[in-house]
Amino acid sequence: MGALDSRLWMTLFLCGRFDRSFLVWTTRMRLPRARHRMLLTSPPTLTGLDNMVLDDSADADIVRDLHKWTISAAPNQSTGDKRLENFPTEIYLEILSNVSGKEAFNKLALVCRLFCSVITPKRFNKIIVYLHSDRSSMRNRSSKLYEAIHSHDPLAIAFCGHVRECAVKGTYPSKEQDNSLRSLVEDLLRMHNLRLLTLDNVYLSRDTLCQLSRLSSIRTLILSDCEVGRELSLDDIKAAAACLYLDSFSMSLSPLYEVSRFARPTSSYLVPFVTNSHTTTLSIDSDEFVHHLAHQQVVPPLQKLKLYRVDVFKLFEALCRGFTTLVDLDLCDPAWPDDPGAQNVAGLSRSKTDVRERSEIVLPLSDLPHLRRLTCPPSFAYLFSGPHALEEISFSSTLMTNRESRNLIFDGHLRLSEGMRLFSDSPSENLRRLVGMSWGFLGRRPASSWTEKLKNRFPQLRYLEFIVHLSYPPAPPGVLSDKKPEFEDFKDQLRKILISFVNTWAPVKSIQEIVFDIDISPDISTDKDWFREYALELDIKNVFPNMHWIIVGDMKYSGVDDGCR
Image (tube, rainbow, N blue to C red; front, side, top):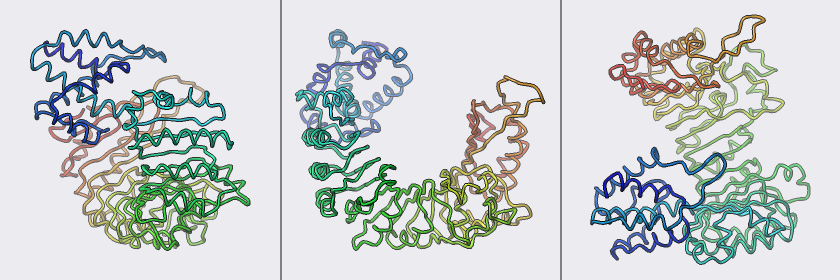
């Protein structure tokens, strides 16, 4: 078969809708015994082809070329919302009957190994199960693979080893739910590689925890919108937690549960799931949980902590006390401190200042010596202080809206100033990436001399990303226009943005990569010729001598031979 023919049948294998008998055939394809043993003992990869067992580098090149080719050239198997039927196995057998020659058979064996090591594990790595009092309804909405496993299909059971994730979705507390969960756990026990379990809207009864404790293979447990049963005791939770070895734990209790939790177990009851020496990742939306955990005799060696809608000011002492091992801290929608010392900030309804000033509230990051990545709202640059060892700061988070903080100044009005203790208290010696900055960070406070200090503040800075909001040009009075926006309408705004950026950040000569993420709908395309000419006018290549590229919207300017693409 020629190269084009080989592509054709290999594409059918990779992108076609195949039925069960073909899966059996590919997984039982005869291969040299040593290679077959290596395939069975090697862990399946879900992210690429580099870990496949291949004959030589030529085989690896074939697979990578094939992978790239099929992504761009594979036929679309869907028409609208309607899916096409599976290709009958006879079609594949007809193709295979025309295969001849050693080279073609080697490629065929390679395709089979690709299915065995990549395609099959990826296709069957996750199942979804719905818990209902009506069992037939549960099976009809659950994953097809789970339906087959539950009905004791021998082929489906043979693929249980590929399942690594299971999402269980409940509806309301009932004895029927406990019964269906008990049946589900019997099926999950077949999946010896199950590592991640999500319980969504599930009532956590004593029997639920008892069944959960049987799944000793899971390493990540996610409790989403769950309700803790009234009958649960702390001993019940400790008994279940003692049977699990969790590397990661995530919890967000049902909002209805939080509102009506009078005389119920609180979120702190679930702390035993992470009072151990091995949990390194925690995601939580409860101040009480974090505070209680930090004061336990056994505290996990957390490296990654994500907090949702919490009061960081009240929790910070507990964070520094219990979690000094933190490497990654993500503050999602935190509250602004309701303390007089934090109110001398422009934008608060009680503030008497016209510009942001230094906050009297200080949260010293020096108490978290291993912290390398921080995600927080831009306003928190006024609260956190150095010295620190951060390598990346992302300002992609926003403030929690409440009565006290809803009048905080729009983040776009922020300007670099001495009041930003996160940057001004001491040089950010290790900082390499600033991500998700509002367009206000393009400029600086008027009459501020801090810009000249930027070079010393960011000696290792390599990457800058700004979120830029463009506004539509106003239509003439009394005129309704349906004209679609064009790049011409935004040239002046972009010109001012680039000038502010160069004027502010020019002292930081270490910068290599710059991104302006244009936030506007519908999207507009950046005029490459215009940008090239304006970049020459601003002398950007000489202003930033180490620059590799600048991205503006959908355009990438390399600065090498003034190239844009």
